[in-house]
Image (tube, rainbow, N blue to C red; front, side):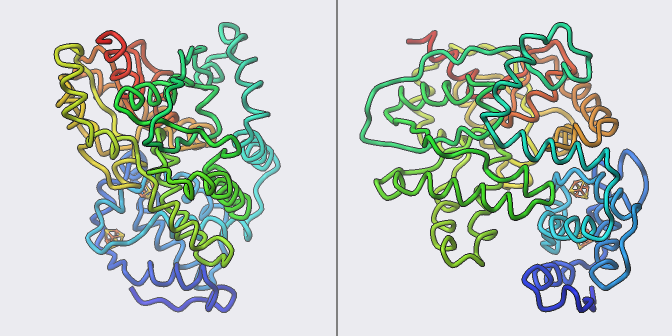
Length: 410
Ligand code: SF4
Ligand code: SF4
């Protein structure tokens, strides 16, 4: 597609990146058919091709309007369109740039600004979020349904293994997961301990940066990323083999540190190294598949449905690894129809666009439950909480299933 960027953005770093992405788009529209919001709303401007066109107009100097902002707000950033696109258009990067520029031109109403500021300031800070979550869990039975949906029941993490192993890997605790589902990382540490690997949580590491970055606070998000690099670096220098992610949303972001900090001379090389070391848990455990299978033989007789998060299958382009591993250790695992579609959680989307988010959740749950699972498993804290709010079927991280069976086998 031909472009003619306006002076305000031409020759800037973001302008050049956006221009290169726009030029790859041939406007074929293949992506539109697989876009969840286009499927729900049937409006070209609520699909990727329409949104790309809107962003191109803004970057070429046409003033953005509230309508432009609304069509970009309704995008889940699920990146399903990237998987579909035959031309390699990096829609996720383009929409991050486009949203920031549109927000600079179109001030949001006060009510929206308050909600977005509250999310940006509270979610990434454990010292704010953890006590708030504890209070929410105590008051959970009394909360209105909309709020109860965001507060999972209190969970016990069990014991964290204390054995020292020569093989060591870092584990990101992140921001909201430790208080919402502390068992996920504890289960990961126990499973890897049984396989001879010690998991280390760097005390100063925190939010991966995605929350602030995707809410248009790029500077705040980049600072969260620099903080994690500083927290991990001594362990990397000491020989940590990998940085393991149990939330695929965080994994998709940390794998982009190298790109997002490429312009920062103090951090560019370290960020590249951190991204290179970062692995989703489903990229680590297949190396131990035979050992796990022999430990677990016949111990997991469950029928489970796997929901692959968008950040795993589209953001990180990892498909088939969780299902392959679970099948190898004896789980009867299935994908539901339209498993490529988003469940509606999408970071802060379920708070900011609740109507669309719940329609997508209910569609997803209907398809998952059509497979008659005893349990639904996934790989991202946001998806787990969002799906669990709409069903009585237990929804867990897949590593909790493996850990539960391993402790029974021990
Ligand atoms: S599929 Fe790719 S090239 Fe075609 S319209 Fe969508 S983004 Fe553009
Ligand atoms: S990121 Fe998802 S919701 Fe947004 S345009 Fe692409 S497919 Fe549609």
